[in-house]
Every structure is written in structure tokens, then in C-alpha cells.
Amino acid sequence: MTGNRTAPARRLRLWLGLAVAAALPFAPGVTRAEGVTLSLAAATYVVGAWAFEVIAARRARFPATVLTSFLGLMVITVVTVAIPRTLEVGLVLFLLGVAFSTYVGGRTLGLCLSASAAAAALVADILAPEAQRADGATLAAFVVLLPLLALTVDRLTAEHRRTSGALARLHDVLGAVEAQPDLSATLDSIAASIAQTIDATVAGVILRDGDRFAVAARTSVPSSFSPAEVEWLTQVELEVSPEGPLGGVPGHAALIIADLERDPRLLNWSTPWAGALRGLGCHSLVRAPLRLGGDVVGVIVAAFAPRDRPDQDDLAFLEAFAERASRIVVRASAYDRERVAALRLSEAAEEKTQFLGLVSHELRTPLTAVKGFVDTVLQHWDQLPEDRRRELLDRASSNADELNRLVGQLLDFSRLDAAAVRLSPQPIALSDVVEHVLEDLGPAVGDHRVSVDVSSLMVVADRAALGRVLTSLLTNAAKFSPLGTTITVRAEATSNAVVVSVADHGTGISPEEQERVFDRFYQATSNTLSRRGTGIGLSIAKRLAEMQGGRISVESMPGVGSTFFVTMPAVPSAVDAERAEVAS
Image 1 (cartoon, rainbow, N blue to C red):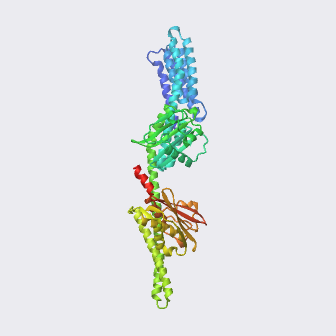
Image 2 (image 1 turned 135 degrees about the vertical axis):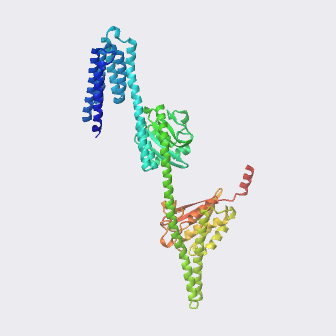
Image 3 (image 1 turned 60 degrees about the vertical axis):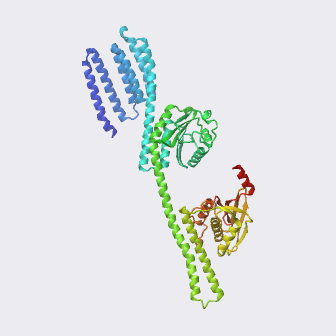
């Protein structure tokens, strides 16, 4: 298909060339013999170039470019020998031919043509009459200029092709973003484009959005780093070494670090990234910021081995590349944030749906029990003995207490979610809070033995809030441990805090679940259907503890039991208070 489209263009060039060749004998200032020579030379070049193109269209490996270049050189040589007064024009044509051949055929062809053109010019000058020879300085300059011209054109051409290739890849990235603006794929494509274009040992993109990092990296040498390890290395770098080349992304200009070992700015650079780059054989580094307006949203980094030392061209290229890539990165980042937000909304909606189902079940269970026990007593009052009536009413009261606890938990959750809770931490006796909680829980833990050892320790806390935290932990301990087992409540003082522990001998929590038990709506797999909860008790306890300056944690072993720890600020001793007053 391509050959069919280019054939008319080849024929057009052929006929135009032959028309010019036919007109040359009639050019002003040209003798009949010179005109014929020029016409034959032009016709030879035009027909030869056309023939080479035709053969190359049929045979992919045919060296049409090389043959055409040397055919042109030969034609110019013949003309300058046959018409000596055209020598100076021939020198200019030699220069143009070398430049064009280098552009289309590369440096090797350009240098070979330079040597041939220099030899041809010298031969033509020797054969020319004395009066029409070029002076020695002109020939010397011509001989020196030919290879320099070839090298210069080759360098400019390579730079142009490199930039064009990079922009083409960037265009491909843009097209991919248009179709599916995935942040990870976008950053990976940009890193790959940089690595391929400037032959970097390591090329990467770092995007920072608040405390969130998005990182992509490519290496041209074997590397054992996984994407997760690269992201971790980057986060550590930005946290521990803000003065390093990857640190302090906002506000930094583009730069070149020619020697990672000796650059005075990096004499103390010994972070994990420094070791990683040195381990990959990197010796120098180029960095360019990703800017959008006046804001810096990220940074592009390229590191090089000693043999590929970066220069100002690499820096200029990265700056131009970064300027065009910034909008793509920002768009992909915005899409990624929207995707994450939509996913979270979907998860939240699903969690709330499950939560409403759980709450309905949890409220209905004790309410049904209360109604059943009370109805039994009312309907069979005369037939039931006194002790049986009391037993049924006690069970109704116990379920009413459970119902009251669930309603209180829901109210706490609602107020915490609306940030409507106001706490007043003050010095209180821990033993009073624990005693009050156990009195209120009574029936909920009545089938378990509760061992308490909190001595006379004092904490700084809101009495009601700390009571709700301990209530949640004791209720869970009773719910998930066999009847008759012991629940231990113990407190120990540290230098400036009191650690309260609630330990049970229940089913325990797997290591994978221990980090999630404090997430709201989360239901542990150990929570069987017969003991379902709302999934908000521990999340409320965690929030309340943190609002008082404390924290909550868990240690557990499946099949052995769990221990929850609540760490609260201790009441300062008189000596500590006196020291604080003196210091202030």
C-alpha cells in the first residue's frame, strides 16, 4: 500500500529532474559544451536516484541511500573536473551533499562521504588550470570543515530524533490517559520513555500528594527491587533526607549532580536510596520538577552510570519533557483520586448497609427476649411459682440492659461521627471507674469470674468516656470467652502513664485481624453468627481513648485468648508538678 502511494511521487520527481536537466543547456552564461555536460550529469543523477528508489521499494535491504549519496558525489566530481570554473560551486555542493547524506544516512555515511568529497575536491583542484584553482587556505578549511559538518549534523539529527521519539512516546502516553487515565500506568510509561530516550541507568517519577506517594521507576540494569520496595525507599528518602536530591520535591529547581560521591551537597547522603543507586552502578543524576502553574506536583529523576555522564542537553530535555508531562500526570492523579473516592464511597455504602442489618438484628434479639419473658409472666402469673416469675423477670431485665447498652453504643457512634462529643479529662481514681463499670455490667459478665487488680492508681481521663471504653472491652471479653472462665482487669504504672489491661481466655484473634478489629463495622471471623455485634464497639473505644490522650492496642493468640491494653495519662506526682512549675 505504501509503495503504491509513493510510486507517483517518484515518477513526478523523475520527470521534473529530467525537465531541469533538459533546460540546463539553455541556461544563461553557459556554453553549449558546458550545458550538455551539466544536462548529462543531472540526468544521470536523476535517473540513477529514481532507479535506486524503485529497487529499494522491492528489496528492503537495498542500500539506496548510500548509492544515491555516492552517485551525487561522483556527478559533482565529474562536473568540477569537466568545468573547472565550477570548482568553488562544487565545494559548496560537496558540503550540502555531506550534510544531507548525514541527515538521512547517519554519521558513518557522512564521514565516509566527507573523506571521498575531500579526495574528489583535491583531484579536481589538481586537474584544474592554474588560474582556476582554489587557494590552499580554502581547500584546507574545506577538508577540515567536511568531517566537522558531518559530526555536527549527526548530533543535531540524533537530538532531534531523540526529542521526536520522546514526544511521540509522550503522545502515546497521552492517548492512553485519554482512553483510561490510570495513574500507575501513566507514571510507568513516563519512566520508560525517559529511560529509553536518554539511556539512563535508572529513571523514575515521584508524585507527592500530601502524605501520599505515587512512584514509578525503570532500570536498564538487573534490579531486584519490587514496586513496593521502590515506593518504600522513596518514602524513607523524603522523610529522612529532605536535603537529598529526591527530597523536598516542592520548590526545587532542575539540577545536575555530576558525582554522587563527591558533590558537596551530598557528602552526608547515606539514605537507603543512596545505597540503592550506588548498588546499581549509578554515578550521576539529573532531576527536573513536574510543574503545573506555580506549583510543583512531583519530580522526574534520571541516574546514570559513569560512562553515561549527563550533560546540559539531558537537563534541557528533561525540563521540556517534564513541562509536557505535568498536565498528563495531574490529570491521571485527579482521575486516581476520583476513583479511590468512588471506591471508598461504595465501600462505605456497603458497610452502612451491612451495619443497618446488624443493628436491626442486634436490637431485635434482646427486644424479642424482653417481650417474650414479660408476656410469659403476664399470661401465666397465677400458674408460675414465685421463683420462676423472678427468674423470667431477671432475664427480661438482663436483656433490657443489653438493649440499653446497644442504644448507648449507637448514640456514642452517632455523636463521634458528628464530632459532637465533648470530654473533660481530670484526675480520677481508676478503681472507682472499674467498680462502677462492673456494677452496671453485672448480668453481662455474671457467668464469668472477674479478677481486678488496679490498686490505687490515678489517671487523667473523662470518667464517663473511660467507663465506656472499659465497658466495651469487658463486654467483648465476656462475649468471646467460655462461660465460667476468668476475665482479668489489671493496671500498671509507667513513667508517665497507666496501662490498663483486660485479658480473657476466649477464641483469640488471628494476627491478620488484629490490625483491623478497631476499624468500624469490621466483624472478626471468630465472631460467630450466634454472637454477632454491630462492629462499632472497639472503634468507639479507640476514638474515646485517643480523645483523652490515650491509646488502645491488642495482643492475642488464637485459641488461647486476647488482652486489650488501654494506656492513659497518669496523674503527675507532686515532685513532677513542682519540676514543671519551675521549668515554666
